[in-house]
Amino acid sequence: MKPRLFITRQLPGRAIDMISEYYEVEVWPEYYPPPKSILIEKSRDLDALCTLLTDKIDREVLDAASRLRIIAQYAVGFDNIDVDECTRRGVYVTNTPGVLTEAVADLTWALILAIARRVVEADKFVRSGAWERTRTGWHPTMMLGVDVHGKVLGIIGLGRIGSAVARRARCFGMKVLYYDVERKRDLEEELGVDYVDFDELLRKSDFVSIHVPLTKLTYHMIGERELKLMKPTAYLINTSRGAVVDEKALVKALENRWIAGAALDVFEVEPTPKNNPLLKFSNVIVTPHIGSASRETRERMALMVAENLIAFAKGEIPPNLVNKDVISIRRPGFR
Image 1 (cartoon, one colour):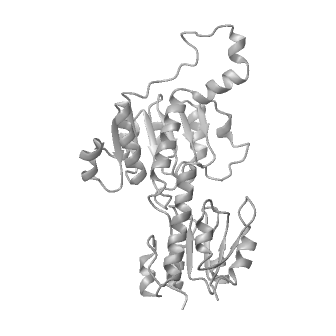
Image 2: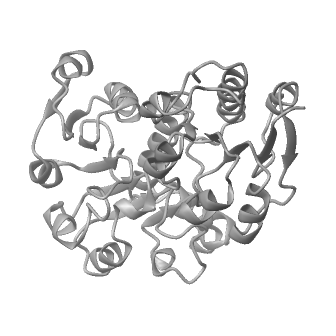
Image 3: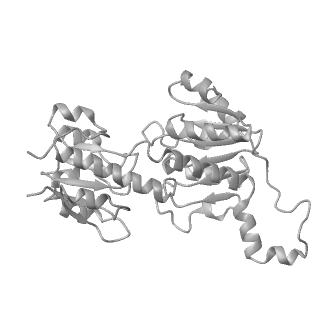
C-alpha cells in the first residue's frame, strides 16, 4: 500500500504524475489554502505532506499527524513550519532552494526600473485618458522619473538572490554596496561589490533591495529608524518577506517623504487587504508575491518537490533536506 500524501494546492507541470507512482495523492482542489481545521483533519491519516508558505505547520497540526514522516515545502523559505518540532518528532522537512533565484532577481529588477521610471503611473496616465487631456504628445516635464544607470544599489543579504541582483547591476553601471551578517569576501571581487555596515548602506544607497529570510533577527529590520537613515531620494525594494519591513513605519516614511518611494512584492499579511494604507500612494508599486512566478520556475520547483518526496519514499535522504539533524533520529523512508 502506498503512503498517503496530501498536497495543499495544485502543482504545475508533471510533478504530481511523478509523485503518484510512489504515493496515494490527494490534492486540495481550491485556489485558496486549506483552513487549519481541514489541515488538522487531513493530517490524521497522512504519511507525507506538501505545503506552501501559506500553510502554518505548528505543534497543533503535528500533534494530529502521528504518522507524518516528511513535509515537502514548495518554496525556498520555511518559516511557516516549526522545523525544530519536526526534527524532535523525526519528521523530515525539505524545500526548493536555488531554483527560483533568477526569477526573483528578474522581478527585483523589474520593480527597480518600474519605480524609477514611473512605469505603473505612466500606464495609468495613458489608460485613464489623462494623457489625451493634456493635448500634447510630449512635454519636458511629463512623467519625470530618475536614472538607474550610475546610481548606488544597496543589497541587504548577499545570498543566491542578492548575488544575482548584483550581477544584473553591472549592466547599469551601478556601484553596488552590500550588507550581510557574514562578509562574503569571495563574492566581493567576483561581483564587484563593496561591503559596508547596515547603517552606511542605508545612508548611501539610491535603491535599497532586501534579500533576507524572515527570522527573529530580520523581523521588522526596516523600521522607522532605518527609513529615516535613507536618502529622501531613495527607493526601497522588497522581494523577500513582508514582515522584514514594518509597514506602519513605511507608511509614515512615505507620508513624511523620508524616502522617494517603494516597490513591494511581499506584505506582512497576504493577501494584503484593499484598505492597506500603502496602496494609496502613487509612488508605491505593489505585486502579489510573484517573485518566482514564471512558468519555467514554478514547474522546476514542483519537480524539486517530486524529487524530494520520491527520494524519501525510496529510503534515501532527500536532496534538499532542511533539518539534517533528523537523520540521527529516524532513517528516511516509511518502513
